[in-house]
Image 1 (spheres, rainbow, N blue to C red):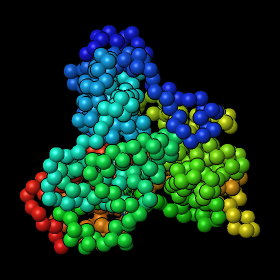
Image 2: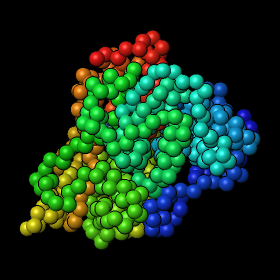
Image 3: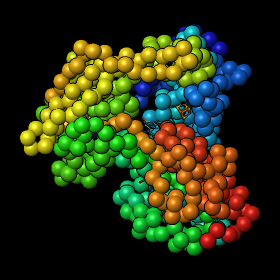
Image 4: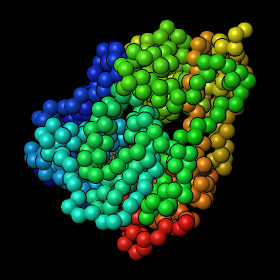
Length: 494
Ligand SMILES: Cc1cc2nc3c(=O)[nH]c(=O)nc-3n(C[C@H](O)[C@H](O)[C@H](O)COP(=O)(O)OP(=O)(O)OC[C@H]3O[C@@H](n4cnc5c(N)ncnc54)[C@H](O)[C@@H]3O)c2cc1C
Ligand code: SF4
C-alpha cells in the first residue's frame, strides 16, 4: 500500500469527460485521460484491503461482485502510485488480454465492490486500468509476443468478438495455430460494430487486431461459417473448434404498426453508422441519418442509450427513449448489499448529451407503446403510449398496470427498436450438431464442452447477452479447456 492515508486525503477523480455540447459535434471518444499526477493520487486512494473484494469476480444473487477476470487491482493501484507504470502493465496483462477495451467501456463491477465504496466514492479502478494500457502502447511497451515454438494443432475460432479474440490470443500464445473466422468485413464483433466509436474508438480495436495478427493469428473475414464454409469442412481441417458467435438475435417488436417504414432495429442503425464512419467518414451516405428528425428509441437499456448518443450526433430534432421500468434508485438498496455491484441511477454519457442539447433527460420511464401509426405512404408518423405502474405482489412477483388517462401521442420520423436480444443464432451450432438450450449454445459452464467432441462454446453465445469482461473471462477459460483437450487427443468428432 503506497499511502496509508491516501483515501482520506484525496477525492475520487474519473477520466475527464469532454463538455457534452462540444463532444456531440463529432464521433471521437468522449473521454480524456487524467494526468499522471492525478492518476498517482487516485492509486494512492486504494487501501490494499486484506481481502480485496474488488478482484474476487463472483455473482451474488445474479449481480456481479468484483472483477470477473480477477484483475490484480490493489497491486497495480500501488504501482501507479509509485510511478512504476511498466510493472503495473505487466501485472495487468497477466489477467486481462484487452484492458484497452474494459478500461473504456466496462461497467466496472470492481468499483461497486471496493471497500472504500461503503462510505466514500470508490477507487477510480477503471480509469487507472485504461491509463496503464494506454501508456503501455504510447511508450512502446506493448509489442507482438510471437510464440517461440509452434505445435501442430490447429484451432478454428468462429466469431471475432472479445470472447473469440481472448480464446485465440491464449491458444496462440501456447503455440497452437489459430484461425479466427468472422462473417463481417472487420474483426472485433460488438467491439467493432455494436459499441459506437465515441465510447470505444475503432482505431483502438484495430490496433489490437493488428497486434494479434502480428503474433500469428490468422483472420478470415467476410466468411460466414455455415454458409461460406461448412461445419464439416472445419471439422476436417481443425483439431478443435470454438463457437464464439455472440447472442445478437434481436427480439422483435410485435405491435400494431411495427412494420411501418422508419421502424428500424437498433443494431442495424449502430452497425451502419460505424461502418459508414470507418469506410468514408460518412461520405458514402450509406448509413441512416436522422438529421432534423424526431427520433424515438423503444427499449431502456444500453443499446438504446447508444442510439440516443448517435442520433444526437447526427443532429436529430428530438430524441426520447422509452423504458418499461421505473428509474433506478439513487442509492444502493438493501437487496443489493455491498460487495455486490449496485444498480443505481446514473446520467450516462448519452443522457448527459441529450440533456445538454434539448434541456431534459430523454428517458421516459414506465411507458408502454400501444401502437405505431403510419402515414398514407406507410411511413411512421406517431407513437401512442400509456403510462404504467409497476406493482410487486406479496410473493415478490412484479407486474405492470396501465394508468387510465395517461395516454399520449408522440410525433416520430424514426423508431429504433432496442428491446434486447433473444439470444444466439442457432444455425451454426446446429450444423456442427451442437445442441441449443434456451436460445444459447449449450455448453458446460465448467469446461465449455458441447455435446460434440472437440467443439467448445464461449462468450455471449454460451451465456446469453452480457458484457465484454465476461466474454474475455470465458475466452480465457475456454482456451485452457481446449489446450487440455488438445494435449489429450487429436481427434475431432466427424
Ligand atoms: C450496442 C451495444 C453496446 C454495448 N456496450 C457495452 C459496453 O459498453 N460495455 C460492455 O462491457 N459490454 C457492452 N455490450 C455487450 C458486449 O459487446 C458483448 O457482451 C460482447 O461483445 C460479447 O462478446 P462475444 O465475443 O461473446 O460476442 P460478439 O461481440 O457478439 O461477437 C460475435 C462475433 O461472431 C460473429 N459471427 C456470428 N456468427 C458467425 C458465423 N456464422 N460465422 C462467422 N462469424 C460469425 C459475429 O459477426 C460477431 O462479430 C454492448 C452490446 C451492444 C449490442
Ligand atoms: S475489467 Fe471491469 S471489473 Fe475488471 S478491473 Fe477493469 S473495469 Fe473493473
